[in-house]
Image (cartoon, rainbow, N blue to C red):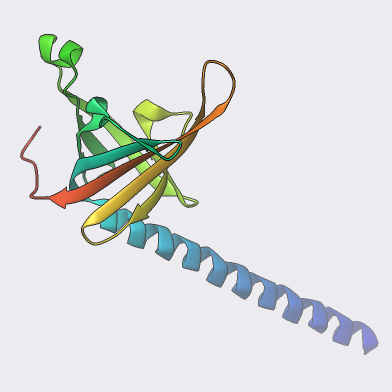
Length: 148
């Protein structure tokens, strides 16, 4: 009889652990889905700072359009892109584990702070001299870009 009670206790503990893991797993996915849906749309860059100092906007990503199907279109207005007639760059994107991953930026990822009409992207990179540099791009939501 004692053996049956012990086995029953293990079953109860295992069921409780499985239920907790399931709840935690779906809670994290829900939060990621909420932020992903907030990102979908078109955004125009309004400011850039490097290590807290205001700098010229990043012309390689003046506007970004995130699509629900995890494709993003990035408007590059550099002279090189304009001359080569390649101002629109296509890339994949995903949001998971509190990180925004844009395929053309990998292995670096962005920390994102979304809002209804504003978004902030932040990432830390190594400089050529080996020091860390923090870049923050500020965006505002704009009317949906009709670019393909």
